Length: 93
Image (cartoon, rainbow, N blue to C red):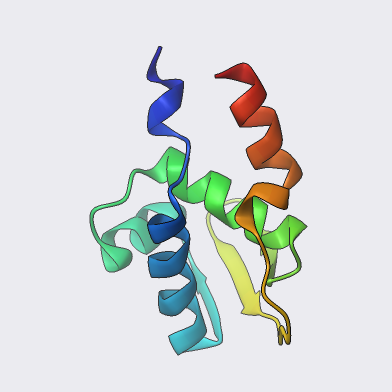
């Protein structure tokens, strides 16, 4: 029932991408990232990060307490709906 809360909007992706892009590379916990981005649920942020990784917008290494995130150079537009995790979430919903 609460799964719809996890499905990111395009605007959610834009906010997260702009934030990550402004740093280029960062290393912090999911909770800290949520706090710094502001007004985003950690479950939704996790899905956004996974989708961005699937779409080769970012790469991350997940450690026991933090994510080491690197923003990748992208020269083409990507559709968030092409990410496998988003497709699977839409099927469930």
